[in-house]
Image (tube, rainbow, N blue to C red; front, side, top):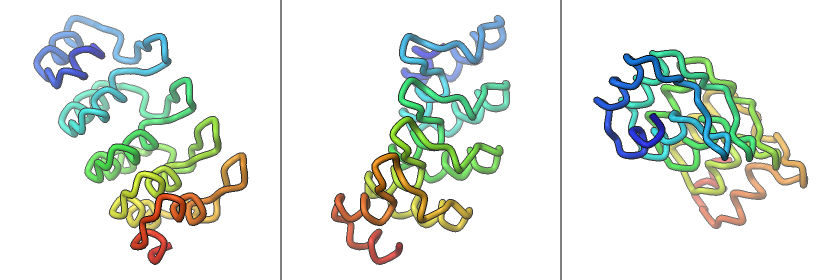
Length: 148
């Protein structure tokens, strides 16, 4: 299932689901098919997995949830979809980074704006005391710094 998502093979994913594959199966890195679909920027695949019951709030070995991964890859449509499906926007990874901080680090201005509109805490801090503004400033994106 994960390989099919990684290869953007929607028909194969459908086939595996129809044959009873465990949609929430994890690999050795505690990653699942949803993260593979997000990394491929494939909204239709993400929708297929969510519609078939994949857990959107699980975390991988780094503590990243699907929203944090989507905030890294720059897929605003996937971010919007996950939020519309009730993903925890306050989730943090093992380093204390939330989706907003990740979007700032990866210079994803449109995602930063959307997360802010959704009420994510701009002052939320990492385990080292950094926040969206300080870590965004390190990335050097003036537009994000101005926005924050």
